[in-house]
Image (cartoon, rainbow, N blue to C red; front, side, top):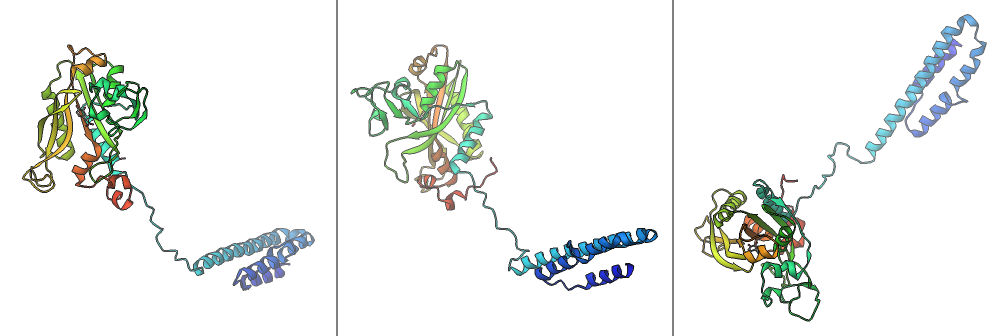
Length: 347
Ligand code: DAH
């Protein structure tokens, strides 16, 4: 038997395995139930007792050897097949596109971060609102042009009257959120409210029927216009860089008294005057003012004890000034050639 084992080992070693077919032949001849090695095991019981130990060892070694060769050949055949299928295994994988945040989300987050650092919380309100929260409680007179169907998208008109406080509409500004906050919270209140707003406007480079605003509100005792100016200067420096200057121009809003509009120095020409700022050196950024006592009263806050300021800005407008994009529509078209230019670390 010993000789037969050695013979088989030599055979198994030199058996030509070149493809799947010869591999299978090899398996049948040496390793299958009817193969040579198995039949040797069958003959093992006739081996004389004194030779059993040695023969068993040799037999096991032979089986191990034949099995190892089978496995190794199988593996090298299959990797040879992949290589010959034309695939270049050293090629780097297809790059995985990661996407990027929308510039409006980036700017929104940045503005929220700037105000959070000085204690402002974030509050949100509904996009579908009633006349009361968007206009009446904000001191808009009944015949104010902003209530006109041409400016406001109405969902449900309650009565035939020009303006019914129960009329349902899409909010035209985020100032409605300050009303909701003041109705439900007691001063001191320090909050910002980002959100989508809707206006019945034809879409152009400078106007859109949907855009985003951030509203700011601070109500406490002894809040002054100087506080407002200081917080706006802080914001402008954080957002545009520390060399920016601001100016406040008198303006009018029904819900603030006095009211102002804030300009920032043109970041393109540094205030000298260019075609972006139309030679003025200034770019308009937001509306603001001291909350009108009528508004405080309508929201159940004592206007004798408390004062406060409010401000509101368009997020698209802030983004346009920061990134010098002069067509609003780009923010809504979602063309990835535009969007992918706004890479950020912010998550
Ligand atoms: N709501 C105003 C608008 O949509 C922006 C605004 C102006 C908000 C003055 C304010 C403010 O809070 O005080 O044009």
